[in-house]
Length: 158
Image (cartoon, rainbow, N blue to C red):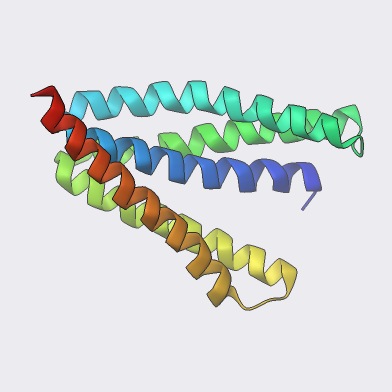
C-alpha cells in the first residue's frame, strides 16, 4: 500500500474509532439522548475529518519528504477514512435503542482496531498480540474516562 494511503487509512481509522467512541459514550452518559448522539456523530465526522486531514496535510508538508501529489493523497485519504469510519457508528444508533447502540459501537470499534492492529503487526513482521493489547488499552482508557466525565457532567447539569 502506498505511504500516503496507509497514512490516511491508519490515521483516519484510529482517530475515527477512538474519537467517535469517546464522544458517543460521554454524551450517552451525560444526556442519554439519541438525537444528541446522532447529531454529534454527524457534526464530528465532518468537522474532525477536515481537521485531521488538515493536520496530516501540514505534517506531511513539514517532513519535506513527499511530493505534492503524495501530500494531497494522504490528505484526501485521511478525510474520507475518518469520515467513513466515524459515520459507521451512526448505523447502530439509527436501528437500536441507545444503550444497545453504545454496546454495539464499542464492539464495532474494538473489531476495527483489532483488524487494523493485526494488519500493522504483519506489515512490521511482529507479533500482533502486543500491538492489539496496546491499542485496546488506549481505547479502554478513552471509554472509561469519557463515560465517567459524561456521568459527572450529567450530574452537574441537573
